[in-house]
Length: 104
Image (cartoon, rainbow, N blue to C red; front, side):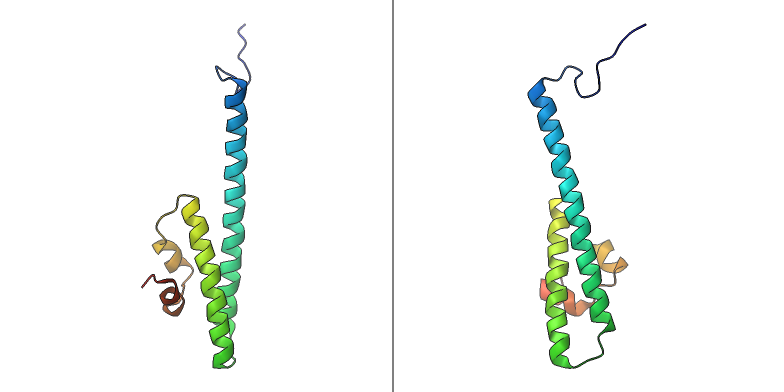
């Protein structure tokens, strides 16, 4: 019968295991922040699509949506997602929002 050391300790020193745990924690927070940013952007896009009011309100919603989408794109880039084409198509981000981001 052979015994194996617990995973994470095989040949790794205590500082290496600590940094692995820290890296795991950082990645988990990045993923969580990406989810929150995506939910805010999705919510802002839904409010913009549902808007039936005046132009002044629409400009405000456009600015809020552009800010939310911009924050989401930044968070995506921090997580290593450099291209946003598929997200733009999937979420049907309007050109008027993308123009405010300098995308088109």
